[in-house]
Image (tube, rainbow, N blue to C red; front, side):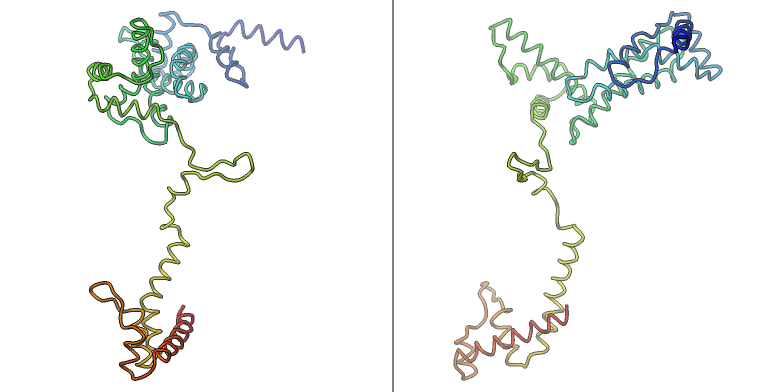
Length: 312
């Protein structure tokens, strides 16, 4: 076993690119990335030309590996958005690989300078897509405002502390809003809106169980659109059919007097939103008592319910 360890150590010294074993946590990855050798200008030019001219993937890999520490450093600048550091590094590595693919060694610029833009761009895109479910910024000016608002607020806070010792102000003053809008080329209203979005807390849609084991009320309860739920749609269609064809079929099974009593009592609506005839009005018309009209109505409704059940 000791001879195997010595052999692996010898290989690692001979080949510094073999210093990245399978890693189990972020700290081990960062430590391994920082141990990888940095390239000289001549090595960088050589590897870049090998990849560009001969599609040498091993050379491209060395360009990527030698700049992993850069991605780690850049990703630390975006930890304030509450996203996992490992995800930020992963997205930054994607940007680094895109930079290596497009890097031209004849442009007279180092890869570190060229890759910085691609790394930040990929991390920015990831943050905008994943920081909140609702998109925070869509235009170029809004993106610039999104990524500069926090740092500018810190700058204003430091200036206030130096001027009057106030380190507790959280909101932007009208003057600060105007200053920020001019520097970032946006409207003052956009500054205030973005400040509101960034300062607002996230809300869980699904309710969480309380300490006593009971479910609490969550926004999902009133945000859900139940009208397009399949069972609700079937039930709504069934009600519509019963209210139209079903009622018509049930009325057809009644004698003329019973049908007219039901229509006058339940289905007729006048222009003033009042109902049809009363029991006494119908009693006077048919020359019977109001109680008799009520009995006819009850029998007719019972017959209609049976007809509707058969129809359904």
